[in-house]
Image (cartoon, rainbow, N blue to C red; front, top):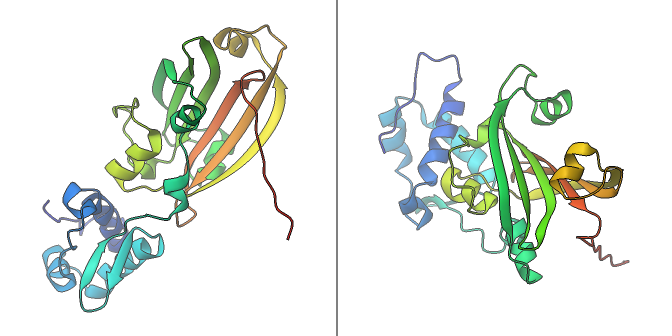
Length: 242
């Protein structure tokens, strides 16, 4: 991969380098343990100072994507014990319950975000974000409808193979690690559209879950809404008093 940045761009050099490094470390050879190029050589190739390069590298080290060993070099972190690795995708979660997930419909569009989504991402309501709708269930029928919005920073184009687990795509293809999830769960009545999608009657109860997903640097990645048939899911919360 040729290392190039635009010195005439209005985007600060360190931000350009940060995005370049994200693309670089997503490549298979770096995922498999290859050292990043030497700092001096990389700075010279990009025509920047070592301080600028280090500013970008430090950000990825802070996020847990890179590991720098003094006297050796910098490599991609292998998140063996990270929460991201132990965080089950919907497909994995259903698999643990013996349910084989069926994708009944998927629709991807670029849209202007709502005020709530724009505020969460910290972008303008006039910007474009990727929206993904997925109707999912088991062989017996649909039971959940997901609507996800993704921060443009993730790099998703909408042409990806979303039969693969979402967070696997983000991590392996774009070096974006989903580490933290915050959720809000409420009971609502199914409107006409949701009732039709989930094979219910209008007004019947459904479980709505809002999920806010962040990377290791606590930057927003995904704003997700999940609508579940109330007879299809049980949420279990285990707490331990200290």
